[in-house]
Image (tube, rainbow, N blue to C red):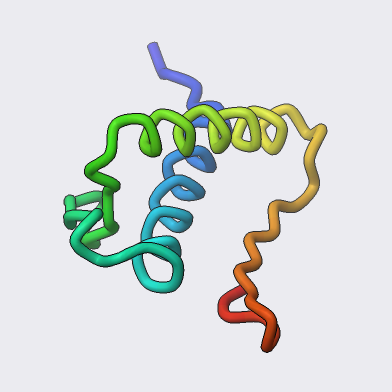
Length: 87
């Protein structure tokens, strides 16, 4: 019996790990994050439980939308008054 993997099961953790790593680089002090292991890389995880919960909830919605085909693309842009920091 084979298990069927949903696209959202792949997209959601990818988006979450990408987002938290970008946040740790550009927006928040690095001491608010710690590295973890995921698929052989070391993405960052926020130490603050409420921030972590907010990010998890937000990314879960986006991941489900991508998995269902309702969302065609997810764009993460971080910018300041000078322009785009990361895309």
